[in-house]
Length: 362
Ligand SMILES: [Zn+2]
Image 1 (cartoon, rainbow, N blue to C red):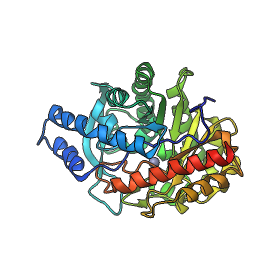
Image 2 (cartoon, helix red, strand yellow):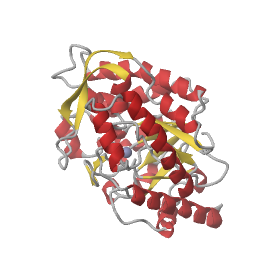
Image 3 (cartoon, helix red, strand yellow):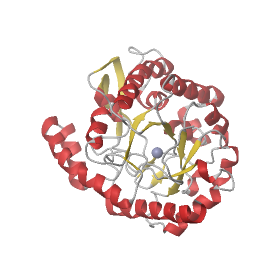
């Protein structure tokens, strides 16, 4: 297990931050071909430093570019690797039916790195530690392989997941080389499995097999990267303040122990995550990324509320293994209409709560 920072209760973003309306428009205009990629990139280069300053002012130890360049935390993969047809499948967000995802339709080929350019830019604009997030092979497979479009390219979902792994390994190798301080694999689809309604919707009957597939893909992706500080992020997926699944993590807790990972960032602030008791079986050799900010609730937590959430978790996990983060990224899709000022105030409360905890327990 690696040390995150030289003080207790370090603070992390999960990755995405709300985009101002003009950045949301910019991403849509780039997608529609109304502005070319180079010009859009130049505008983003000018916008992102202000978001980094915001995170520094909030007090975060680990920052990101807010994923402002991406259409979504996951589509950055299909924007960097060819073989996908865009917007083939509905995301299934009942409160936003126009949200769609691509499907793989031909053999994948990388035409650029996934997150390396983002992280190189951030590295050049902050002295804080930098977190690089990329989607996991399992989550890519659950979202971007569809039997109606994909069997000609990859005969099974599992084959597609395995085919994603070399692209992710190449990325991790380069992220390590350019000095990313934490590398996070986003694997929300593992946590979605806890919800029986989701399993029924997806036709998942063999839960154990599905969990094993996820762990196997994860471990194959990070194998041999002992020098990296590797996180995984799990959540219940959300759009516009509504989770698409709910339920406690009991069913996946043992699997977390089998993952070759340093830190596991999970939702615990939202009632949809089913309470803190599932931490009773949290693996003893990992850092916990404790979700202490409920991004679906417009109420801005007080530092005291944040500290209280951490102290409840300390009944199950010792303080030296607890790191703090919001439950999830604030806007995993650029279309997600979340408020940037609200996110700043919530992140600031989280960091003040961490400072309070260091005074009480450090
Ligand atoms: Zn999430």
